[in-house]
Amino acid sequence: MKSDIEIAQEAVMQPIKEVAAAYGIGEDDLELYGKYKAKLTDELWEQVKDRPNGKLVLVTAINPTPAGEGKTTTTVGLGEAFGKMGKKAIIALREPSLGPCFGVKGGAAGGGYAQVVPMEDLNLHFTGDFHAITSANNLLAALLDNHIQQGNALGIDPRQIQWKRCVDMNDRVLRNIVVGLGAKGDGMVREDHFVITVASEIMAILCLADNMEDLKNRLGKIIVAYNFAGEPVTAEQLHAVGSMAALLKEALKPNLIQTLEHTGALVHGGPFANIAHGCNSVRATKTALKLADVVVTEAGFGADLGAEKFLDIKCRKAGLKPDAVVLVATVRALKYNGGVPKDQLSAENLEALEKGIVNLEKHIENLQKFGVPVVVTLNSFISDTEAEYAYIKKFCEDRGCEFALSEVWAKGGEGGIALAEKVMETLENKPTQYHVLYPDEMSLKDKIDTIAREIYGADGASFAPAAAKALKRIEDMGFGNLPVCMAKTQYSLSDDQTKLGRPSGFTINVRDAYVSAGAGFVVALTGSIMTMPGLPKKPAADSIDVDGNGKITGLF
Image (cartoon, rainbow, N blue to C red; front, top):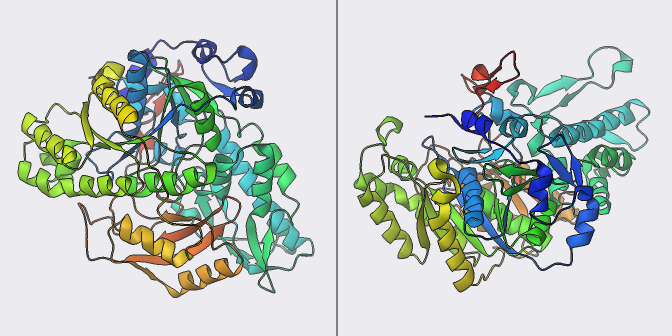
């Protein structure tokens, strides 16, 4: 069986100009990065902005397991399937981070015959967006420390610095560091921290900004520190906005690539929904809606994280109205949730399936709370049985969901037609009643408590003294009307990654909170979740190599 990278490397790609032409995009509206990648110009948006929107379909999943679910694979395959059916479709994806590429995941371009290409480029430097974000972030950090060094006219309290440095790599030793060691001219000695680039507020700002004016406005609002009087100090006060915006000028433009079957893919920003908002850019999604009849997009990790943030943050802020949600699971993952060890998932086990399907049930219920019709799909494996399929199908239909098998990994678009037909049926017959989960005017504690109860199934949320103090301070500063971005483990509905299935009788423990004033949300840190992940004992990097001809192996 061929690996994902072998399938991708054997693909015959169309020049990106030809892919663009299928959507009415001329060469003048492309900024080419070689033959197979391009950015879309600002001028293109001006040309298409008054067109009617296509239908917006979100792909999400159950909580991820070692057995695999295949959310991006489904997104890609569904887009390809619509193409096979003669529908004008485009997909809108998140960009992969180098952290998991070299850490646990080894890549993030879909899988099998449902991939976006060029796969190696996408998983590595791509068009440099993340490097631009890293540079803008660290420029702000440098300007902040330099301001303190050069007389500290703003009276910044070095004990109350909020802004962290970042790098797009899993590097646990950078979580907590000391900077400024050495001579007087080497800066003030203080504790500092790193986050992974994709958890940076700059990433969220880039993803949520409508245009350059909006981007600069958001950058200016970033709270970098507090002064000795306890008042916030912003990036605008540090005169950092113009230079940061200059670094982000090209990164703000969405990237266009293609699937193995030449469906267009707008890939831009936003990977992690366990520690950040986890959605691709508003610009990519809005542009896609003007270019195609159906847009298939995705959000990070399970529906308790990515889908909730897509529906409560991105759609709320951008005025988007999703028309349907596809919820992805596998028989194997459901059995894993039912207590079956990883090495025994191939055997039919309806008892374990019955125990584990409660995870799927909760995600269905959660999505229905937003008023959006749900289609459940199973990524099929050769070990799955008809009895298992029949059980899950009835389970979903009993809960008002359409159901379809997906075979996109093995068959590409052809294997997604059954799913695409169910999605079209849903789009045509079940109008969306989309609404947010909580109102803007609700208190921050109540917003967190609402998400904990309604989405996670908790008895409520508890707040450590640091979190309670931070939330009060945020409200006192006038940010109480912002939505909440929960930082929580992706592996469980709870904040304890060992609790599989549908846990109950637990409390979500909020240990701290901070405001991302530029992005426009408040981040609540739960459990032991880290905004700078670490590498596993055997990182994916161990297996990645390149030969004398420049051929890369080991990405998957």
